[in-house]
Length: 396
Image (cartoon, rainbow, N blue to C red; front, side, top):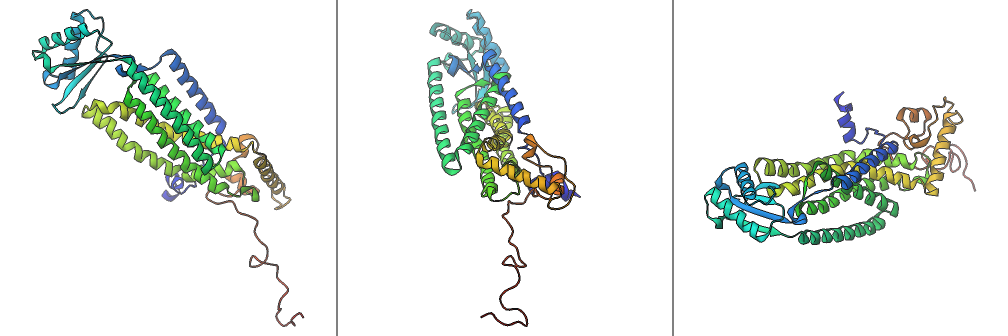
């Protein structure tokens, strides 16, 4: 009985999940999430680090106490100098000289920075030279953003060229649309939750694009294999063949995503959470969120969108009609004499229910491949007769 469980059927690509046929549901959910993300961009914006918003950072030795102690002392020094600001973020960082606490604030003038450093050293009873203060202009963050946008445009252009040469333009459009959705949803999560955006976050965004593209290419490669020469037979529609490819590659995509998320999760939860390596948090967070979203978009968005685009192709439209006509004729008893099942229309026509397909004697089971016309005759050749017959004379 265990062999017939969902996990076993997923592993063998025989689960028969109707993913492509329910594309309206996935597109509706995706549209709502994108709308929420866009509204969050407009209303909440992003929590920008000092590299993008500008600001100051103070580093004090970890020997002064806990991170909370250091933050409390810095806030006290800021209040004593009447700066009107407080510590924005605080984290523990490592370095050649030992661990230290990095505390970031909004922009301060040079006089205020020196006064705050002196006050912190006085309160903590340490030498002022042990406290380092850095001032970051928002112009540096603007340069990083410009370079990141330029890198994104070049990456998308190269991806489009590769996918068009490797597959076709419809697959390129579906893959790039999935990539953009991945970026929008990941950025939306950052905006809604209030995660800080740093240069490490930008690097992570560009990194997850490669992972998302790999997952989409794996699925599309299987789609291409299942749909090669599909118009030469009337066994299944393009949507059914694409849905079969998703089922066959679903477990592989899931395994790849889990294996990729495990080390990233360790980097985020163990390295940044338990060990206090704050510099790993920004990169680990965007990778973890982006990879999880990439798995969902590659399965629920890319392939259903591809099937939708292919259904506008006149050749595919004509092929789908022939498949439905053949099943309708078979169901009416013209070919088998069996009772016709309930007609299927709309999105459900892309992926026929296995039981109804079995009654119609037309749609193949999950795991099978499209097949051409079967030759006639006892051995796949010409009908019997002709040639030398037992006991007969040869023809002259």
